[in-house]
Image (cartoon, rainbow, N blue to C red):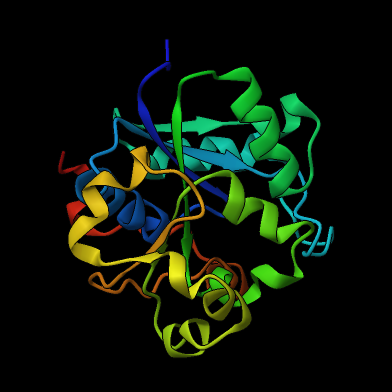
Length: 202
């Protein structure tokens, strides 16, 4: 079903999902010429505390409400694959979905943090990566360890439409209209997920 398609992978806790996730996904669909974006909801992010983590099924239900788009797929694949770390998840996805062209999607905050992830260089060497600008994080991320190590593999933004079909390592940094939604702030305020007025646009 997915063979030959271009799929963006957006991983995270989605605790809760919010319109910032949707904003990045829609930008990825348009600018990377993707067929779909999969939200990979982690059963339990190894770098985040168990306390305060909503049950996976509750997070998935919230994600479906926020995504509200036919090309955004809400997935429990990490639970199904029994993986906890991104490098292992990518290895199993590539083995299961032969011929599917994956792109890993992440915010600038994660580009800054990725050297703390297990086998982080395997991620860069497994799939192309698209990094999206995020308020306050971008400058630090672009001067950080990962960006320096893979500086020669950074693509110009003008070529981003072909990124999904490229051989890794290959990554691009995309400047987009910034969205300030934060799952941490939503939880702290006890509020519902932030849903922008344009969320029902296709």
